Length: 356
Image (cartoon, rainbow, N blue to C red; front, top):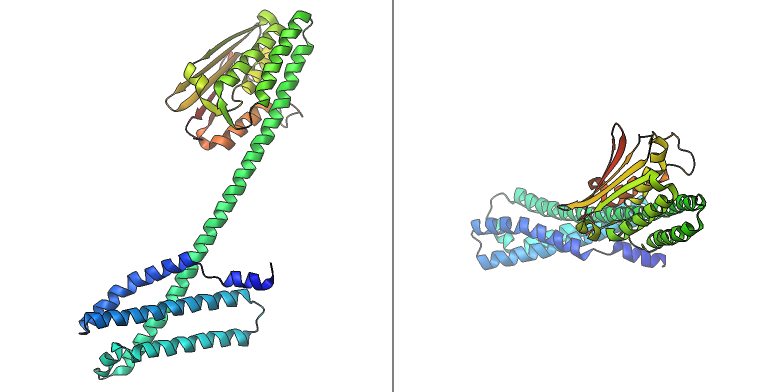
């Protein structure tokens, strides 16, 4: 685009903002002008014609004033004498038009009947100049508010894009982490007959991870993946792993951002075996209460405070899960850890109407 095109675009008047300016000016000045003219004995028809001529003059003066100010802003390198010359020319033209409007309308008849006309002339001219100046100011006030709103919308869009990119990055980090732990379970299994079933269960979990293009899906899909994962770990640990899964049918049909519980289940098994003196007992409860999706993952053992800083590749699941839920649901997402005397419980609450 050439510089001439840029200049023309910069001098363009926003029609919507100018119309709002005209309407506000009319709403303020018309009742006042009509009342004053009727009080001075001017016939209604004559008063309306006088008001119309004054309004058209004011609107044209505001239009030219806006164009002049835009031109001054777009030409910062213009020498000061030329800038002042443009302002003076505009002012002179404005005064001539105001004088003509007063001189050739019924306002002049009113002035001729007054003994002292000079103060009235000064007041009439000053009020019209002030009205035009306020109109120009109001136009740029609305224009600035519009630009600020547009800037805020762009910032919000960029933040939204950043959140979506962050969500995808965290999800990409979670999936390899889960895959690594599952492959470790397969490597620890020596029974060949069980390897086939473990591989099938692992395929189910991977199919779940790879099938999610969006943020939300029916929780039934993750529930199936959790059951497959628990089956894999049960084959590995045998009777040392006891688990109980209670998921209501309503919760299975609920659409939530996924995964929600896989990182918690993985964390419970990984750290639960370290701190449980005997068999690890794992309990999963998922339900829907009103418009809230509620999930509980509890395992026997004790809480191990994470290392600061964490070792590379560790403590990924919980951090990413909490971060992802906050990015998607905001403050309405609740992620709570409860440390019991002989168990650790995680409570997750999500609003089902947050992303309708």
